[in-house]
Length: 501
Image (cartoon, rainbow, N blue to C red; front, side):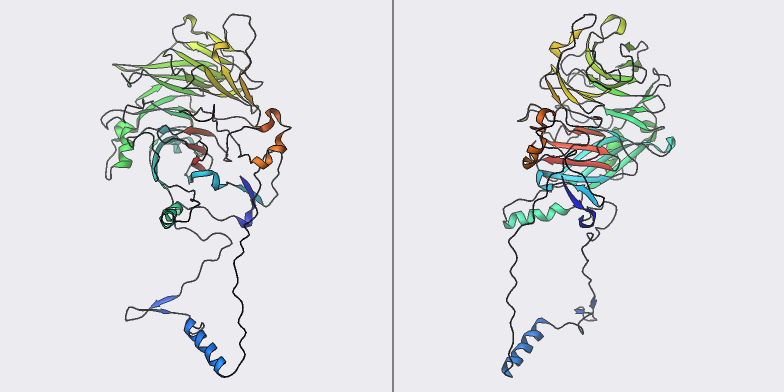
């Protein structure tokens, strides 16, 4: 991220209309008139001489014995603009007329897309376009819930992001690459279909589909769950909505999509934010389990059976404050983790009597623990992010059992980079050269030349994966497009892929 004066900033791609001339760049005025013979005339012909007239005039002057001064050709300067420093919070400060803009040299792809209402929670939907996709342009599908001005204006929206082009230019100046570069300026296409939702959406999560299981046919459901500010958890079938985005003229059966397939009323009127799905695996991906946690510290389990969904009435209770996040174990079907505003992280087993946690970290952070992420590659590692801006990595093999007097374990790693709450955190779904890759709220890319200025920060401010500055609320890796990350903020979605993931 570098900082530039507002007056120097050029406009970005405009999804809602024709591309505008960049600020500070004058659009060239065209005044071309077509005559009756189909040829074109220059409407300003009487004011400007043609190149031939200028050459002929110079020749006549030489024949008349007049001296003609020939100005030397102006050579282009080979000097490159001075590189701008990476902006680091706490070290640099923005002036009143400056804003931050991203350094596109570190992105293979970066697109921003605006939406009508802020979507502060979303999830990536699986598709049938293939796994491990590397070619551009590419396409992604997401489902999001809105935060509209009044409760009745909210929606569940399914977005199709297509024409996601590579935006990083190649360094070699070959003709083929020049042709490819013409596609770099093409705008992505954002299409959506929506269903009404009463109340703002605190969190939304899609039914998990194993990698080898394709998107179900339109006759079968594809569920998403929404946590409403009204205190209800709704389960929706969005499979026909996806079909409407892909098949021209497809008519959505509103009786199937516009009414929830099931509503969890276990929480009463208590609002909540925590939610996670678990699947029994590839053998029976339709056997689903949904965990939901509310602000009163209660966690409820909803399961599926032949008769449909079944919300269990007995809650899991060990937290003394709001449950902020929930995560099923990636390897043990009956185990899940939770974090809370009571500063703790708890481990649970649905088979345990009394619905109490079986192990935990009594004080994982000094303030509220907002988010957790369970590593799917190394199942004993758990990430947590707190209100104080800290990120910690926990080895669950060291977590103390409930009822013991052993002290809390120390985290195996801690990152104290931020001074604002961590609102979203997620392990990469695949192995990378790093032990971990995290995307943080209000993070920036660190430049090698700036590391010296960060030596006095906790942990040295070093060895931090490349970051970017979006006012991010939630972030997810795309499971089928390696290295691609999607974020949501007040102004819309950002889709990017950096050179280091």
